[in-house]
Image 1 (cartoon, rainbow, N blue to C red):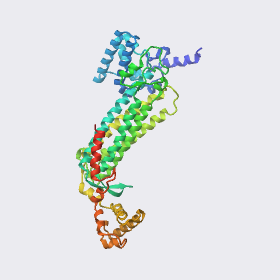
Image 2 (tube, rainbow, N blue to C red; image 1 turned 180 degrees about the vertical axis):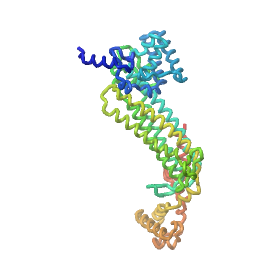
Image 3 (tube, rainbow, N blue to C red; image 1 turned 30 degrees about the vertical axis):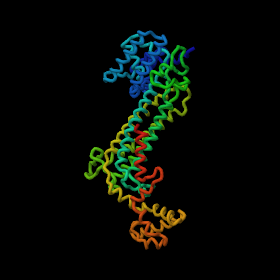
Image 4 (cartoon, one colour; image 1 turned 135 degrees about the vertical axis):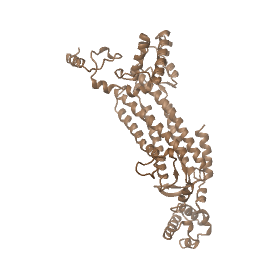
Length: 480
């Protein structure tokens, strides 16, 4: 028995002058419209209309299956598919009007279909719920995004490889703690990012494999009594298989979380390179220079050339992290199966798709753009006693000293050179011998920056020949 107090509350709402209309798609038991604020918080069409293509794609597959299983007639399925194709064209031409009173993209398309083909449109939702419908649409959307990002990151790797190949032998300082550590080559440095982006692509490809199961046919949460063929719809939509549990099918958003996680990690890599570009392009470093196309000026300081694109990539990485945290927080305490909280899954993903794509494309453009100050880089590579480790290694190899003793002797030699305002290689043999009498003139051969770099022949090291081989392998592995 229904308590009459609920009826009285409904009548008050119904009498409100500004009430929205009752939604005809689900309002059968309702005698009044939802409160204005409920309607406002409930509506999602403002952002989920981005799923229109995937929604129509899923509906076409579902309709074909219903006809194949003789749940609806051939005439109905033909009308449905023709009507959906017409709606798709209208949306893409910009002529379709999305109505907020219909809540979301799914109801907007279904309502438009009913206006076009009449009663047959109502049969499309047979054996389907908005729960499995939206889960399917969203998986298709994220799958499309994963494919797009794999392609964009591949193009970024190509740009990095191109510049690395140009600078296989270009010397530069390698840093730890942002202090000059040992000389490396710019080619080797850029190849580090090729590998990072390779792992990003691997995460994306791996996430796609787990994502590629179809929720369609799970209905609201428990499946359906209609004799549907979930394998057919899975194949039609390019999924590997249907999801095996109907509750999981409508309740899971880990595919979106995996995408956001992979995007956030990629954002870390982009941000790190962006930070280096900001440093390298500064007057203090003077390693690279961006063209006018990738630089901005100042409203008050006419001499300024600001690396704003790199700074924005660095800044936008924070949004990628926030979007991941947002969806994790939304999902962490939801009971099975579907809950309206899950409407909040779309905006973080949509924002990440837009943000990450522009960041990847901007970084690709900047990598291909910057000019390199080879002389400045090479000079910096020889500063701050970057060849000290080479000297310590020579003491170990030639004088058979324990490394810790060699380290101690080298530190004393650095102190001596610092006191005299000299580089290590500028010390005379006699000066070196005041610290370690056994040092011979042969030590000078390892103290040049180029020889230091050439000596790093261990696998993964910075020796130019290593870098050349690494580039060749990366091209075969990543650009195939």
